Figure 1: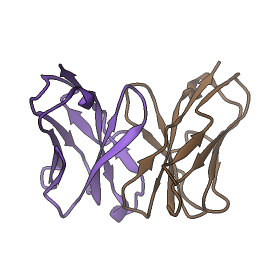
Figure 2 (figure 1 turned 120 degrees about the vertical axis):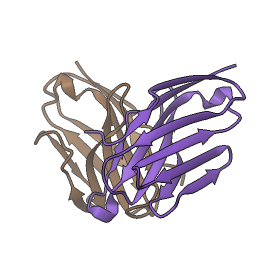
Figure 3 (figure 1 turned 135 degrees about the horizontal axis):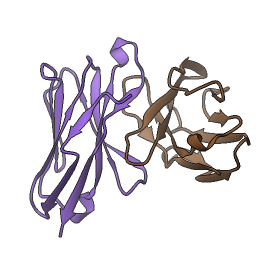
Length: 113
Length: 113
């Protein structure tokens, strides 16, 4: 079963615009991780945000976490064609006995040149 | 020293045959995870090791699936008497320790005819 749900399921924007993807989850977490996957290929780790953090930055990526609402968002600024991919959030409940990552359903992002 | 490696990358087998999928984690990573990913979905957890101990196998679909990590490094996922519904991408991930970033290998695409 999949805990997280990404919103929207698909997003198309013009190159240079910002892209925002949201993730909602159901249980208490230790951390939340975002991954990128290009055309069914490998999963690339983007960023990890811990439950006691509210915002984290990495290059053009900005992740927020609201544990009271059980939601996270991923913002990609100044998008590029190479950002076209599926983006997944994954929750880690390892402080609560579950060591696995539980993935969402993914957002398919298309950057139009 | 690079990332997580998996072999074979592609495996085509006939129904009823046994298959063994191999995962070589990042050197020094204590935790190793197996996931299965269907097309268009996020990965789903199968099993998890801490060193050589299998800590959680709750995601294994049935008793035809088993995994081992005898020396706390390389792991093998074995599927006995394969069925067509076993066809999927099987992904391995490793992390330095529980609750840390999980880094994924390229996966093994299994096709059961």
